[in-house]
Length: 245
Image (cartoon, rainbow, N blue to C red; front, side, top):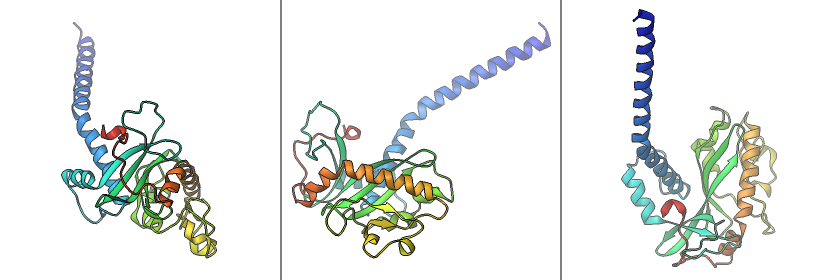
């Protein structure tokens, strides 16, 4: 057997062994990776309603127990009504309810918006009045670091708190991102519905604004029910969310 042939066999054997090890490692680590993803999502939901802070560290158990004690997820239909347990019609929208002493204090909507380079995933929380934003978070995106990537930073996200999705007449307008800033480009009336934009990231702001408007519009029937005080308690026979089943 020639030296060249031995070298080829050795290389092929090494490649095969490495691929098998990588496959085994990937399969073995998958449950841990999924747990990391689930806990990070729960942490962002809690952050959106102000229960966790960036300046503090939390264990997985901390996040899981806080989530279980404060958050209830249900599916709603296109009319904003809670879907009944066992409903198999599909097409439901998930809503995360933050409850205090049996009363819904805020509700959280999942955000899945187009960005400049990919999808932007996060959560937007609204107070039980159905019109005031109580928090906003981003947990996954593909935006440019230092530019559009600033959407994941606390300085940007905290500006959403207190903004409104209705104008002065009570009509739905969503919440948007100003260019370049609320102070420079907005009137006093418009400021209630906009947050400061990110310098050099005009397109990210534009896409995220459009995505927020589309999602909030889809959930507007839910918000209307909160404004009319018809969704202040957790329905008992509700359809739970897929990630809690």
